[in-house]
Image 1 (tube, one colour):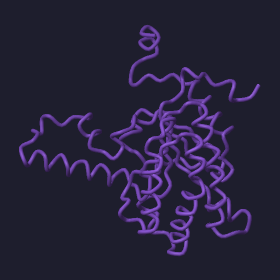
Image 2 (cartoon, helix red, strand yellow; image 1 turned 90 degrees about the vertical axis):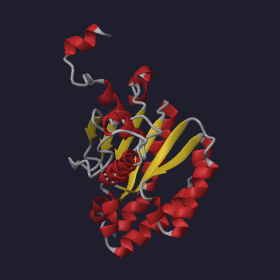
Image 3 (tube, rainbow, N blue to C red; image 1 turned 180 degrees about the vertical axis):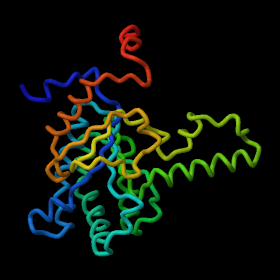
Image 4 (cartoon, rainbow, N blue to C red; image 1 turned 30 degrees about the vertical axis):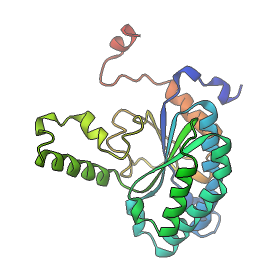
Amino acid sequence: MSLHTQIDSDRLPSHIAIIMDGNGRWAKKRGNMRVFGHRSAIKAVRDTTEGAAELGIGFLTLYAFSTENWGRPKLEVNALMELLVDTIKSEMSTLMDNDIRLASIGNIDDLPARTRRRLQEAIEQTRDNKRMTLTLALSYGARNDLVSATRKLAQLAKEGDISPEEIDDKMISRHLSTADMPDPELLIRTSGEYRISNFLLWEIAYAELYITPTLWPDFRREDLYEAIKNFQQRERRFGKISEQIHNNS
């Protein structure tokens, strides 16, 4: 029996977020430069995206480039930016054929003009697609996002539009870059590292974490199915006890 048939379609996570890790190690194991790993990861992105859309996942968010990644060697950063442009262009047919809308979060203004322009064109071209929203986190850092939201709320309070007492978790969520999507229910990290790496810190408060030793270039839809199957075997209590969950079901 395939993993696909073992998944309960009525208990799918509405939003899956993935920390795509291990490209560099994958390349080094093969005696190649790190950039080779990034190029080889495109198939993982395509297969995972198509697999998620086919299952009926509403939102998929991929951690593509963090604010900290700007500190990597310039040659690698430049290659990543060029790869991003090429990938968006080559994968437009995948997005359109699968009715997937492209979105982004992060400091997009930090991206090179050519990269930013191609990203914005793809977002515009796919804006009416309905099946799934694929969000790329680019030049993204959760702490920066929280600081930005805090500044917006502080300005509103300063101008008298809100009082400090009105600020609650829902108001903070509405001022984050992820305001238009539900919080992730499942967070996947590849390569076996046990870190969140400044990704969606606020939003994953109650997400289920799934760590796989598989390096990202080797990740395929079967690996996604395994993560979802594992998610569906867990009891999500949200601070309550098992008896309360079962009594209310």
